[in-house]
Each structure stands twice: as C-alpha cells, then as structure tokens.
View 1 (cartoon, helix red, strand yellow):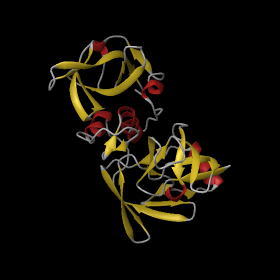
View 2: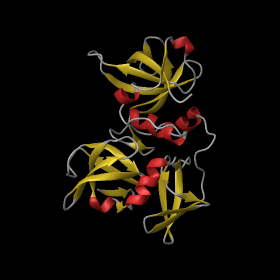
View 3: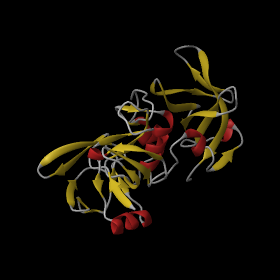
View 4: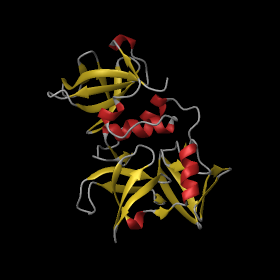
Length: 252
C-alpha cells in the first residue's frame, strides 16, 4: 500500500481520473492519504481525515513513508489558523489556506518524508468555532471547495472544526450522523451545527449557529443569516432559503 501527502497549497480531488471530472473535495497542504490505485497520470486515494475516496493528479502529491503514515494516524495533527499562512520550502514562500495540516510540527519545522518545511505563523489552540468561522466571511461558494478562495457548506464546517481540533466527516449528511441532538432551537448554543433537508427529506445543507439566532453558512458565499425553528431566513431576499431538519452538538 502506497501513501502520500499534499505538498502544494491546495489540490483538487476529482470523482474520476480526469481534469474534466467533477471536483468532489480538496486536499489542503500537509493532509495525508492512502493510495488505492495508481495510473500513469492519476491516483485513486482515500483521505486519512475522513476516508473520502477520490482521484488526484500524480504531480500534486509526494510519497509518504509508511512508518510516518502510521504515526500520523495515531497522533493529533496541528493545523494553521491564519487565513493565509506562509510556508517556507527550499528558500521559497508558499501561501497555504487556513486549516492546512502541520504534520510532525516541532519548533517551527515540519519534517515529512525527505522534505523539510518551516512555518512561524499561528496554529490551532484556544480559538473558538465562531471566531474561526468568521475568517471565511464572503468566501465564494465552490462545490468541493475547502478554502477562503472557494468553499462549499460541508467543507466550510469541516475545516472550521478541524482548526478547533474536532474532526468531522466530509459531507453534510455524514456530519449529521455524529454528535448529540439539540431538541429545541431555543436550546442551541454558539458552535452547534444546524442541518437542513430538501423536499425528499435528504440532508443537503449545514451551517454553524452563532449567538442571537444567527447562522453562518456557505450559500452563494459564506454569509450570516437569521435562523429560527423553520429554517434560515435571508434578509436580502426576505424569504426562507433552507428548511431546518435538526441541530447537533459536536465536541462540546
């Protein structure tokens, strides 16, 4: 079994082995994975963080030693908490998005496989979920995206929670399966996850509850709207845009 890690700021992960295929998620710098199948130009991978399977261009990752992969599976990985962090590698600057992984980070240095990187910025510690979530305000919506340059609703919640030391699955319906149910809107707390369904009852959207009956979520862009027992109320359109299904408390 081969293993790898993302050595560039952001790598698109696709449904099939083609640049024309749908992007289903992204890898951030430092995130690691198993290689399930390797072709001439593409590799099918299983991302360690959430077991998501997808295809990545072979030029956009480096091999990870098996003993390092196994060690990373056992330990908690630090993540950047700056909107754009500066990684130094062989004298060159690389800007990485918030939530990038810092494997084997020690006193400003990352040593992974046979590569060495340096990072002197902020990383996850005592930040609150709402504080990190607001970093993404106005980020454009992008299906499969996980950065402030473009992000989808569940990618948004996954990255925000990962910076705060809590690992979530990738998709909204998967995230809805973990945590404790909050029975009433009035009992919701800042940092709870709110899930929304469609007419068929399928969960299709997720956001993070803030104080004062507000929610921050990715819909067109990352925005703050009102929320009540019915769902999300968009003050710009003067209408409800998402129907509330349930609220979950995760990691509190």
